[in-house]
Length: 197
Length: 167
Picture 1 (spheres, rainbow over the protein chains, first blue to last red):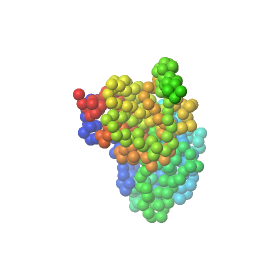
Picture 2: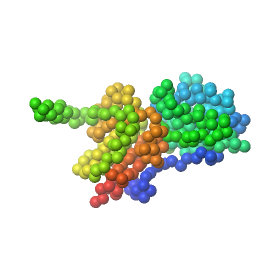
Picture 3: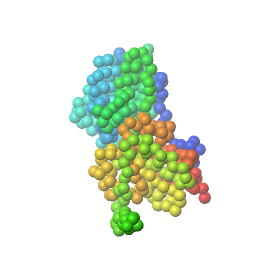
């Protein structure tokens, strides 16, 4: 099997696992359990202009580095019709720190102002093709559906918020609010892999 | 005098400290921007380079590291070099990375790349890379292979044998 994988790799020239939704695609719906025990669905946000959907987790240093900035995004943009919805997609048997109970603890400690949902089976992460934490999918309301408007990083400096030059997500929301397409519509960032079963 | 200094330097670097062989590689160069690091991804000679992007905090990276070290041993007679590119924060070099390399007796060459603007350089490693680690690039001149998942000994061994060191 190992040899088969290696041969396949050589045939295609590389081996990558990404098969994600693209900007312009319809956002896959979801219904997941929040840290307060209640189910939260994308459908619950029909009255909003969009959703800042962020795959994140407890344990990853990059995710931790962005926690305060995610809270700020929610505070800043919820009133403008773009609330944050965070999803932890990591398998608990691989990362015990990312268990549902630890999510509850973390959400309380940090005073999360937004839902923090548990995607225990990675079904939603797979539907979106989330590769890492944190990984942002900015959704905009279009008719009765949500469309993916931006995919990628929150900004261009994970380690030092004061050294950030471009706030990609904020820029993308402002573009959507102005009726324009975000540019860049996708960005990349180093992050922890989504820990799939 | 110059010759003496050279000998003394070599001596200090290796021969006089046999335990250095068992303590792992602690000579880590730090790159604060990708542009200065980039030439290491484009060395033009007949050596095969295995470039592994990892970090001490990354569990799957830590898991594959012993296998990469074993590959280094197996191919030590070939024109083959391993470079472990740590994406740890430069601030944690002394407190975290160096102790990790010592504790795990890492023999491969290690550099630390700390350029926080990932979007500006991830494509320059490989267009197919989304930025999650571990990720591994194997190349010889313009022959390049990129793997954005955890690897192990058998996998790397097959790839190296089939593509780069055909029997």
